[in-house]
Image (cartoon, rainbow, N blue to C red):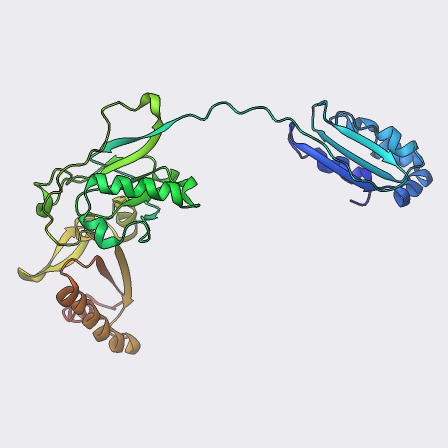
Amino acid sequence: YLDWSSVASFLNTVPDGRIVALCSYIGDEKVGEEKNESTNKINCSAAKFGRLGGFDYDKVTSSPKDFVSFVGRLAFYPTWSSFHVSSESSSLEVSIQLDKPAASTAYKLRSEKNTVPAAVFTRLPDYIMPLNTQLLASNYQKRVAFEAYMEKDSNSSAIVGYTTRSEAPVYLIQNSAFPFRAANGPTQMNAESEDSSWTTYHYLPDAIVPDDDVVEEKNKAKNSGTPNFDIPIADDYFMGLLGSQLLVKNDSSSTPTLLDTSNALANSRLVALYFSASWCNPCRGFTPMLIEFYNVLKEEVASTHGLEIVFVSSDRSDGEFQQYYKKMP
């Protein structure tokens, strides 16, 4: 800072209790203060440094010494605070006795059955448990993998829990996951599975988590082998973005039908919006390639590949839209 007035102005913005260290060479400034003594008394008085317990501004301005060093705490006068005015620079060593923190609260994972978070953060990393293993893992195996992640990963401090269900990956959650909401019912393919519904696990103080709320190792249920990527995200996001219903084609009928947006996008881990129109020449060249890509995923990779593409039409009429949409899967 150019002068002590600037220091005082800055300290006025700092909350009480903060530790402050000052080291200043005041020789040149002191000359200016002597020339403008009356101005300094008005703009920068000792009262402006009253929150620095142990700091003597009058001594700073009246001493012929050039170097000032101070360590203290705003709005406190701790025994360890130190203030020196000297003719030459010197080091200052201060030992601060911090309050001993209370014993850390023990936390435990609380299970909320048939519940999903408002948002998920990311999937459990593959280096902890590969995706294919997560799809086949039991609830107990997923719990062990999650605890291993919390112990090993340096970025785990912001994680407050996870959500999963049978034949689905482990999705990590942060504070943005609250509030939770009720999950949709189990799908047809896994309705008989014990863990078919989404369950969200989040940390709470140990004292308020029931003793019987535990995940135990059991015989692994038979897996259908069909990937399930039904990520628990808030349905109202896509409904607000795309509307309450989407026009959907299905294998049983050649006529598209309207389907609730949440059902149309079920079992999707990636939703793509394709803005296109039949009058757009670049679009007409790209659309066949996109159709081929989608069909390869559906036929050769898996019927449930986790990708859904929503066609957002810019056609000028319903007839143009129908002709263009007819070519799409």
